[in-house]
Length: 319
Image (tube, rainbow, N blue to C red; front, side, top):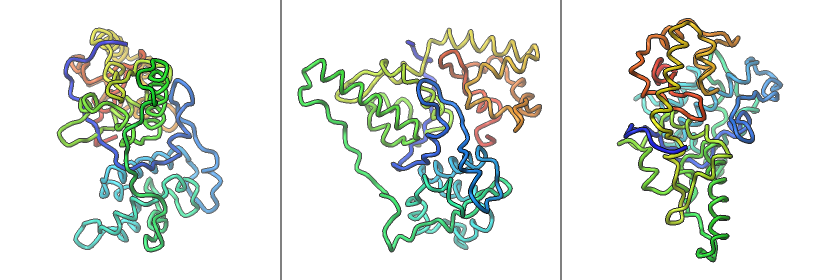
């Protein structure tokens, strides 16, 4: 793929912690395309009232990513009122020691911890899982990010190609796990800056765009000053391609061919327009159909599938 979308501003929400839910990797596909798969063991936790692993894992993922982005109030808003009351001070602020404990949570163990449950869509038991920092953190809070080392013989074409492949595969693993800080350290700063807004934020939309990268596309990444470039070109196909695909998408919507329209979306986008039984949600389909054709530039194209429709039609704050 070559070319770029004009100068569309890309918002990116930077993640600063090196740990993330290992369960994210469980429902990402191995190979060239991400999919969603439930973790059967989630159903078997004794005493847990929630029997919907996908729903529980989704809330846990949003909780962990909010903590990693230092959006502590957003993370705590996903908890039951009881847990919220124990973690927020009378002044409405999150105490510093609570923030440190949230940062030190061993996220990968929460999915199978018998204390964790989902009650009316909110997490219960997070407070009981907070580590006692007096006994040492459950996990390392910070890791010095070091610039990847090039091979000892940088002038060797074979050595450079080996380093490029290893770095590209490492970048792929980091983005699939949501380890955005470490992933950003592998991309040349001049290129990574394209994905940053004034507040250095990374949106869910752009996370999904990066996590849609396939292993077979890693050859598009090349080395510059010992770091990877080519990410912008990889994610930005020619505007003409997007225009044509978006036109087909809107044609389906206008002709009430909803299944065909949804079928054009990336898997992670489809769930925003379907109910628990996999049927289209009338309220959200109505918002999708309310989009004007002139808003096609709000969409993104990747390997003939569209994403960004949920954010354009529903709004990030309502997802």
